[in-house]
Length: 450
Image (cartoon, rainbow, N blue to C red; front, side):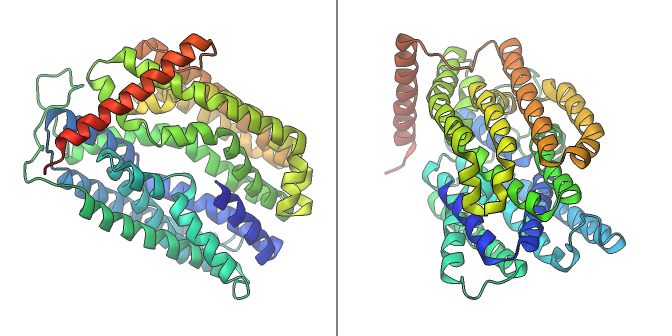
């Protein structure tokens, strides 16, 4: 998180304000493109690897991973062709000179998508230390630390947006290759196939093929719709701000997007570690344990998130001015979005729980309705009210989605994932989390061959 903030501050001081706005729009394009290329396959990959672990002590995940990477590659070719065609026919589509940079963006999309999928595979293999290094906000800590180093060391040579993008693409691609090599070295693949193994959550007597193309696509597309209605709208909002706002406001939005993650950071850190636990406990029918872990996560995450919100509320203008003095005018937008993210943290891992228990399809209707309403009014609102309009719409979306997800988890899974602030319950939740961790360590130790 620190390197992510430091990187943006360095970029704001290395290149002119008009190129900073290009960088923010480029981030929006890459974020949206990598989301589409991933097509929800990462969540499906992780969930199916967790299923396989429950039904086989030594599952062979390699065929599944190769199919997922193959499908993502096809999606990348399609997205790349559409982006090149769009910018060739309408060079001013994003109101910024993106066409000269399009090939760098295409490579960046490929590197980011590949890294995210490999990271999910690593998390499915429960190599948590490596997943923690390679996954997270905008390619993860290892990538961002490399970018920070390159920006500092090469400060005298980096003078325009193209060089900044080369740094990002190179760092992401290098970490993606390193992560894949480390996974191959660390993971133990057996020759035993799980191609026709039944999933623990299947209610049909017919076996579900864990790596069948049609099954992968149908499941991943449901996840994609859900992700596009959440994360996709954030990137789309960035593109709208790039289209309707001036360079200073676009640059301020880039800072705001990073700063509001400080509020949600505690939950994001926890969410990076627990998807496998959610899938496995749900498949085993251990709802009581699952509820304790989820409530423990939100209980631990909410207090530091509230402290971060208070800090941004009172000192947001000064913090924004650290990036660029002119960004301080966006303080009210930062404060509003930070408040909305308190609701996100308070809702706990509701959205993640729905995805990892294969219940995201139940939220599709509400997600699509919210997305359609947003797409219908967002261009007009942002055109007329600029950053403040974007912040209001973004806050409404965050609150609405998380309240709905919390209700759906309760209705369809029968558990709560909201915080508990009773001291006795907090102690019980913490003990349950530690107990589950010790149990997992013992299980993993028992699976290691001498």
